Image (cartoon, rainbow, N blue to C red; front, side, top):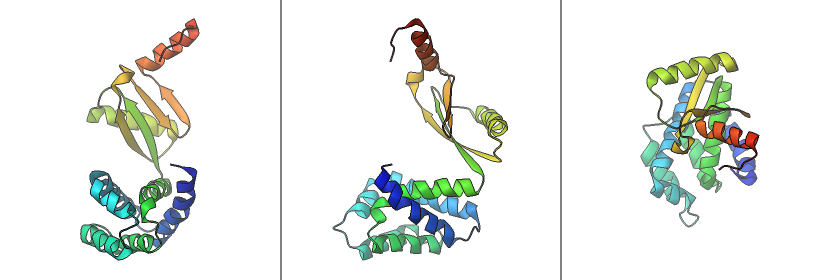
Length: 183
C-alpha cells in the first residue's frame, strides 16, 4: 500500500469502526471480509467502483444491489459516503486498514505463513496453539500462502518478527556462511 493510500485509508477506516461504537466486532469483521471477497472475486466490480466516469449514484445502486441483504446497513451507508466523496476507488486500502484495526481491537493477531505445501487442519491447530503461546494473543488468524520455491518448511511473520524454517532459508543461510551467493 502506498503512503498516499495509507494517508487516505487511515481516517476512513477509523471512522468506519467508530460507526459501530466497539459493538460487535465479529459482525464488523464479517462485513469487511464479505466486501473484500466480493471485490477480489469480481474484476468487473472493482473496475466499476474505481472508474471516475461512472457517477456516484450508479456506484451506490450497484453496492446496494450486491450487498443489501449480506451486510449491515451502516456499512452500506459508509460505502455510499465513500462514493459521494469520490473515495470508493481507495476501497481496497480502506478495507485492509479497517480489518487491521478491527483485528487489533478484537485481540486477534494476524500471522502471515508462507509454506511449501498446504497445511492440514491438525497442523494449523498445532501451529495456532504454538503461536498463541509465543505471542500471548487470545486469537490467531493465519494468512497462509503457498510458495513451492521454499522447497520444504515454512516462513512465519508475526509483526516485524520473521521465523524462517524453510529449506530455501537454510540454504541461503548456509551459502552466506560459506561465502557463496544463492537466490
